[in-house]
Length: 119
Image (tube, rainbow, N blue to C red):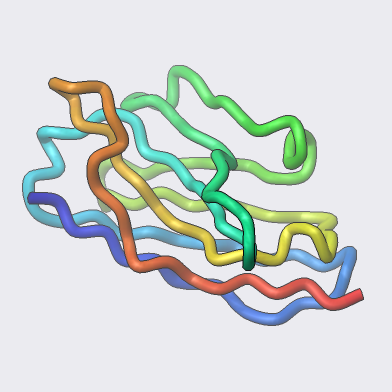
């Protein structure tokens, strides 16, 4: 099993910045890509960003491209999401996720951290 714990959420005004962090523990060697998803009230969970094992690739949702940056530190087993120029529509519960190396599915999930952007 892999455990993921997010931190760094909060309340910020539109145009502001937040940095989310996620710490992984357990059988982290069984995972490769790490990512972030989010879920706003009344909406389905949606993809935000992902990063490969060595940082060789990063993929972003169109809605956050140019504003959010994902990064990882394999020595500390962490993945961060730097969020700039935040908009009210970025308000959501943000989840950290890890992809299983064998199945290539996002199998492991954190509990989520709330991000609220006021207008």
